[in-house]
Amino acid sequence: MPNSSEHPIYSVSALNKEVRTLLEHALPYVWIEGEISNLRAPGSGHLYFSLKDSHAQVKCALFRHHIPQQLQLKDGIHVLARANVSLYEERGDFQLIIDSIEEIGDGALRRAFEGLKTKLAEAGLFNLSLKKTLPKWPSAIGVITSPTGAAIRDILSVLKRRCATIPVIIYPTQVQGNQAADQIVRALMLANHRQECDILLLARGGGSLEDLWPFNEERVAWAIYESKIPIITGVGHETDVTIADFVADQRAPTPSAAAELVSPNILEKIALLTQLEMRLVQTLENRLKQTRLSLNYLEKRLPHPLKRLQDQAQKLDSFTQRLQLAQQHLWQHKYAALAAAWTQLQRYTPQHRLQIALSTCSALEKRFSIAMQHALNQSREQLNYFAQALNNINPLNTLNRGYGMLTHDGKILTDSSEIKVDDTINVQLAKGRLVCRVTDITSPVA
Image (tube, rainbow, N blue to C red; front, side):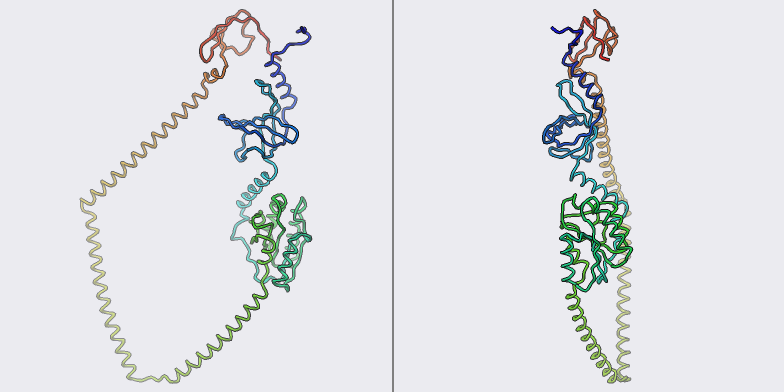
């Protein structure tokens, strides 16, 4: 049997407590990255799960007051967490106590996107009243995109088909990667400085949210907002939406669609000019014909005394008829006013006013009943709340979980130095009480 003076003998609980103390002091805080699995959410509101990678996993506890409201935790999402390394003494389980957690990957980018969208909207960058009008027939078109991507080929093909006479100026930039946002900003500033074109097309092909992220950078949004030249965006596919689309003067679902919007169709313009020419010729011919007819009518028109007498007689008949109608209308108006006065007088009879008072009284009685019921419900809810709060601080709840309250001479014991061997102590349990004699005292571990 080992000598206790050379090899101290631990109880299981004492060993677990010492290991926990060593872990928490040696590793106070760590940052850990992994995938959530086996997520459990008991009625206490705390969360318990495992963080794993391809080779290992570790148990974690996230107490409810540290759970972020904006994050929906579930199995399979990748997170970054700050935790305290610890040991759950009751089962001897190695675990992490997490106090900060956030999702990483596409979910984090989506939250950053929504946060920046809200910030820029509040700053007024999406205000529709500030959108510039696109020129119907631009003198030159500027294109900000990658010179080697599929987007530039689609754009040039559309512009050549629709109106090959308009010059196209390409401002080559990266549209993906860490350098892309800065290059897009420089291209926008360069185009505004040179004033070579009167419309800009900002475009790239489709991709993931991470691929399109340069178009979600705040500095790109401000550069678009501050541009004096109208900007149309054609970023990604139809379902892809970026911050740049909200700030731009107009958004197109694809680069090709943006090229369609920014360029006039020369064949349609030629057809329209031909149609306008035909309408102009026809209008001039009709005006000339009408002028000739008017001239012939004036030449044939001669004043006659009998005709003027007939006109005056017709006017007299018209005035007589209008006078009769006016008199009839006056009598009708007087009769309507009298009927209205009689109706109004009926409203002030005692019987009518009594009916109004009874109706008002009934409505007030209903409102009083509803208000009393509402006040009663509020009082009942407040009583339930205080009863629940009182129950939460009830010491008997702690005793029901297997704990006991130790007293000696009526004083609650919290330190082993307050008693000595052979003292009698009382142990209050959730059900019943024990009277115990102290046979041994162990000093607390330093």
